[in-house]
Length: 123
Image (tube, rainbow, N blue to C red):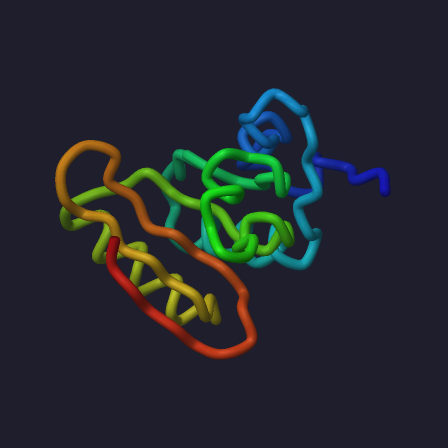
C-alpha cells in the first residue's frame, strides 16, 4: 500500500520505519491520523523512538507473541517529566487505549496504541 506521508505534516516516514535493518514500514493510516491529531492538540514536537517493528525485530522476537508495533497501530514517544503527564492526559482524551509508561532511567517514553481493550502498564 502506498501512503502519502504529507497527510501527517508533523511526522516523517523514517521515524516509523523498523530499525532492525529491514526498512519495513507498515504504519496504519488510522493510527497515524490519530497520532497527528494528538500532535496538533499537544502543539509541540513529539520524538518517535519506535514505530513499526517487523516480526523479526529483536524486541518482537523476544516476546511470546508479536506486540502492537507489528500491527502498525503503536508508537513510542520519547518524553519525560511534566511533559509526559501532559501528553498522557491528552492521549487518553484522544482515545488511545494502550498506554505504556517508562519514566525511570535512560530512554524515558510513553507507548501509545489502539488495541481493542483499554490497558495501561509500566516498564
